[in-house]
Amino acid sequence: MPQVADYIPGHDRESCGCQGGRASASRVTFTILYRTPELGAFTSAFVVPCLIVLGNLFTYPMPPAAIEVRFSLANSMFIGLVLFHSTLKSAAPLAGVLTLADRVMVGAYCVVFSSLIVSLTILTLRHSKSAASHAHAHTVWVHTRYLGPLLSCLLFYGTFGAPRSRSA
Image 1 (cartoon, rainbow, N blue to C red):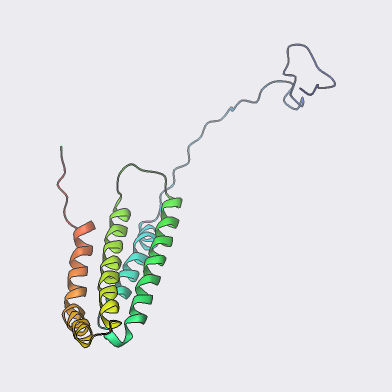
Image 2 (image 1 turned 45 degrees about the vertical axis):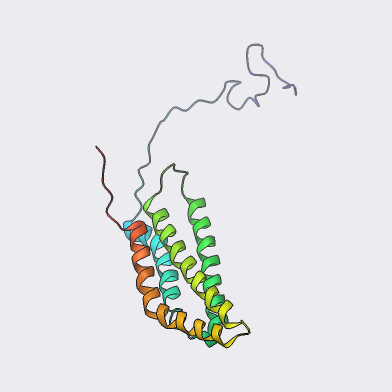
């Protein structure tokens, strides 16, 4: 342990002497009240996932001839959603419950994942050797180009927006 040159018995040996050899103590206690602006919190937490979901809904009408582009867009949106979610979670304190932002992210994951499943199905059928598979790819596209966005919106709303019963 380093020794202080002008050590006085009864004082801290590791002190520099600037406090007179005494341990520092707080003499003033204060509290800072900070309130996050609601619009800023809403914008930073909810706008990005909603825009990603909206962009994903616009991929459903893309024809089977452009399925590779649709699949790439859905993959990019999924990666963007994961990165945004990790950034959002690293900025917030750990909580043992799902917050509203977490439920919105779960809904966004469900929408993007369902789009990936449909796109992968069409992609697999489209790159098959048989003509019947090409017809099936077209049939899947015809049924999902309107039904996909509708069911995705219901799925998105169902994961975070459904009314929850409050227990007393």
